[in-house]
Image (cartoon, rainbow, N blue to C red; front, side, top):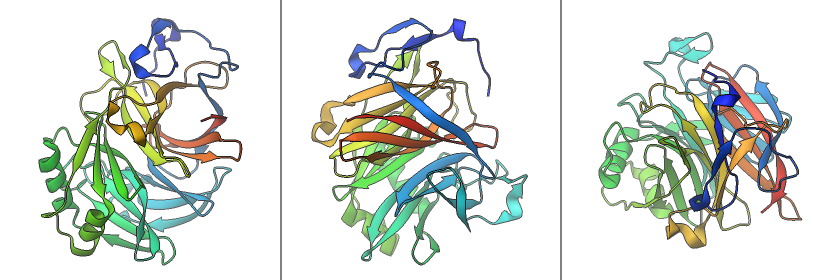
Length: 330
């Protein structure tokens, strides 16, 4: 990843409400400032490439990478405790699926299915046919099932009025009997009812499905806009947690320089307002801007209503970062 000297940057105000975004000279911020999010711990995940999707289930984090052949289980200490092969290793070189063949798994969500919990795993859809993929994984039976991803992404592009260049799913989460899909290109969120998702899983058909969409406004800087990169729900809250990043690229097949990662919250009661409840820039624990690209995240709420966020980064060099953000009041 390319780096630029900090003196050449401006940093973004981490105040709530996107409409009041302010820029000023880049420098250090106080970790006592309650309006900023601080990375408390950050490390590399060994032997796992390009982490992009994550869910939390029964005390463990489950992750997929956009060019890693395995689904991995990770504990709170950032150690891999189990693995399951998703992709044929014939296309794997130095632990990574070759770019021309990679599945580009970017979004992952829990979903209740047949009185059990399954993981829904989505490719980004950005390249046909390799990335038009949808899988399920049953963690209790340890079984994968490939769904009719080509039909799903064809339907999604038609319903959302997206070209092949504009589709780029980066986040997914399920709550209130609704699946939420986050598209990076245009910062739209697409919603599909649980009954429609269930119909697709069981029948592979999309003819009778209904899609709704809502656009969100995220921070901008020098003409570049922060765009969705991950999502999850917050247990016990009618809210969605998301990550976003500003990346200097207009080609989703090519990685660009990361100018900043953000974490925000959307109130579902205010879903149609087009702006998140808040969206804050992430800093390192030395009070400088965090330069990693946060790709997936999960927040754990304690009894005092404090949220601690666990996240992964895709470092664009075949490695994955694992981090924790200091708890803050929600």
